[in-house]
Amino acid sequence: MTPDVVPASVVVCTIGRSAHLRTCLETLARCAPRAAELLVVDQSGGHEVSRVVAEFAAAGARRVACSGRGVGRARNLGFATAAHEIVLVTDDDCTVAPDWVGRAWRHVTASPDGIVTGRVLPAGGADAVPSTIESSSGRSYTAAKDFSVLYTGNMAVSRLALRSIGGFDERISPAATDNDLCYRWLKAGRPMRYEPDLVVWHHDWRTPAELERRYVGYAVGQGMFYAKHLRQGDWAIARDLVHYAYQGCRGAAARIVHGRPRSGDWRQ
Image (cartoon, rainbow, N blue to C red):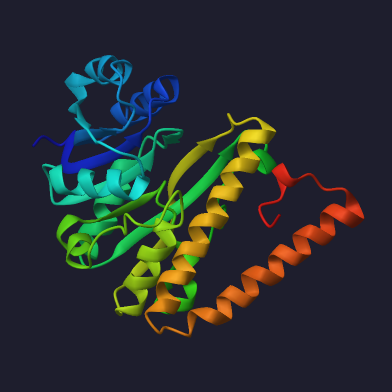
């Protein structure tokens, strides 16, 4: 490796959003230093993603085809086939800061047994972009009740550490695999750190109807997450389930009283 390249793999999962993917890869290729490998896990079943990835071959980009659907399956395949031990994760509709790779690399090498996550800023209207966090204060997490703090659009971890805990649960779909992994990770006593200097932008591209469907998907996946752990006899999770249901009631009230649209309120 050279000073301009660190021995790390970046995993980007896609279902064929080629324009977004190209923009994502452009920012990853411009990172200084950049990662030695940009691994695009493709569930689209088409050929357009291959053409986009080929544009970035000089930056270490390669495509891995993934059968079926599900972000958990795609990320597990990415970790299984990554060429390097340190793996960074972002999404195809995200762009990264120019120092993102270098900062993630330093954070993980300083704490190889932990997961690091960071800021996910909205690129566009804040109400139109899901899964964002803007806090400027760093924090370490140790309690399983904090399972919602992992943002897999901005994540770095040792491949060995992640796979030793079973990776992502592919049964949970279409969302909430991040919450499930975070819960298991923290419950096992493993370290997790939020670092605000690790920055990505999540882009606004969904219509209100698409955003509403996305939030419904989040809720379905969250229900699977709760059901999984309740069936295992983990009644501690019930407390958060009650809180989540309470938030849903508040969201419904906001719609009735204030006319707030469902697309702008994840609680609904």
